[in-house]
Length: 100
Image (cartoon, rainbow, N blue to C red; front, side, top):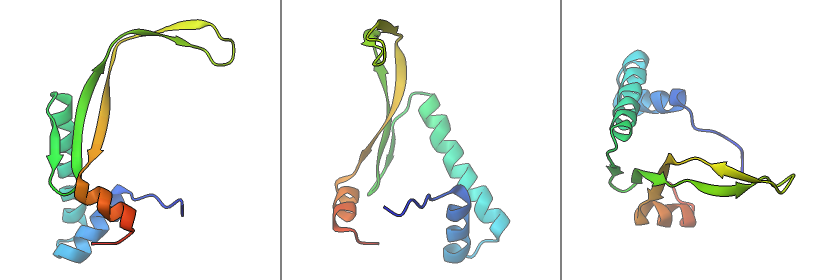
């Protein structure tokens, strides 16, 4: 792996190049989309992006865990976790290693 990370700035720059909006408008568009996704997840909604995947929340119940260093049992409180399930198209593209 190359270790490269795709950032918000990279996404804004891609929108700038592909769509032709100004850099400022492109950045605002990316922020707006990410904000809509975050807001939907906070409200407990599932976010499905066709051809990409589905973000959803899952409730995990309380359980007993174990500290790996000491071996002591530790209670783990109930919590909500964010999960991502890639679409079949995305899985196929990643496995094949092809762009668009």
